[in-house]
Amino acid sequence: MSSRNGRAGVDVWLDVSAGVAGDMLLGAFVDAGASLAVAQAAVDSVIPGTVRLVTHETERAGMRALKVEVELLAPDQHHRPWSEIRDRLRDADLDDTVRQWSHAAFERLAVAESRVHGKRIDDVHFHEVGAWDSIADVVGSCAALVDLGARTVTAGRLSLGSGSVRAAHGRVPVPVPAVLELCRGWDVTSGGDGELATPTGVALVTALVQRQAGLPAMTVISVGVGAGTKEHPDRPNVVRVVVGRPLAPTESAAAPVAGGRLDAGDNVPEQLCVLEANVDDLDPRLWPTVVDALLAAGARDAWTTPITMKRGRPAQLLSVLAAPGHVVALRDLVFASTSTIGVRVTDVTRWALDRGWTDVDVAGQRVGIKVAHRQGRIVNAAAEFRDVEAAAAGLRLPVREVLDAAEAAAAAEGLARGARVPEGLRPTP
Image 1: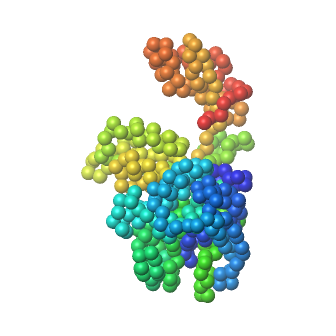
Image 2 (image 1 turned 90 degrees about the horizontal axis):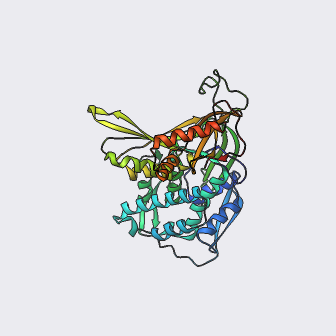
Image 3 (image 1 turned 90 degrees about the vertical axis):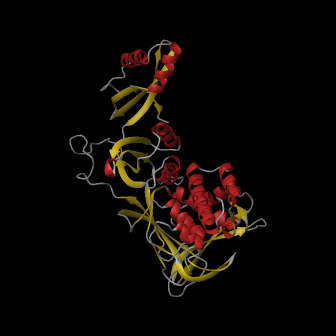
């Protein structure tokens, strides 16, 4: 993921050991180098003319931190249905990743509230988290994280607090019920007295973070400290964000290329994720629709592999290759589209050849040729099979015959292994 400030492929680690809230995350991201103007523009696209984001430096238990205040520019009411927020996110002029992350955070909140109150998800009305300032915290935080150029997002153990707090339904225990619902499957601790983690903050963490872990190996670029509202004299009420560049894999750990070493001119390795799920009870006629849906949703690739599970049951291993920013949306799509009850995510390093497109003519029909190349030489040139099928249908010829003709036309134009890469290749979409 590339940011507007030019940074790309950074790792972001969240220290939430003192708790977390939406404004704390937003303050930490901005303090780490994200643009407040970018966050404001994203918020304006969802709730135009309603809030202004302002910052000021402060201290929490002697630690310098940045506080983001959300100033109301229009009257607000705190009771807002999930359906309204969903529609606002859908219709807003947002970066796709900002939209996906914001939607994921609010959807997690809606699911949690539906469980707590025993309602259908479409009947959920947010109280405090439906206010303008909470919407600004969520959308602004997602936009700021994109602006940082996040490749991966990890976090330590969540501190939730203890005691009780007054809410819309009266005094409730801490952690409040919605927070506990959001934390299913996550490592948590009390961490101290009072409410340390708000539903908005926890929804953001559980929507954005790919895994919980200690500080990853990285070269630190920047550190951001976001202040919470309350002052605790015994501990800083802050969220810390560490932004860094991933350490390059050692040559011994890297995939062997060119005799076991990286040659000058090789592509920089790309850090991606692989989602995996074992599925043994899905109607096999559905698999093509599952793979197509994952690719349409932003997966770099998706495939299935026959496996044998316990007690000899035949099954399929679904694998999805994705950029880190698409993991949450693709994970949710796997759950929605298949019968699996678990998804695994693994970080991977990929070396990919440069590639581009050109066209050849087969009896008046256009067929695209994908050209993969390395260091100025063609490695592979292959006809796009969907173009071949369309041309075969138009010409009323067997697909095999049109494929042979397309490959012959490509070879006649010099698109052969070892040849120089032609000028004017179209970039791969």
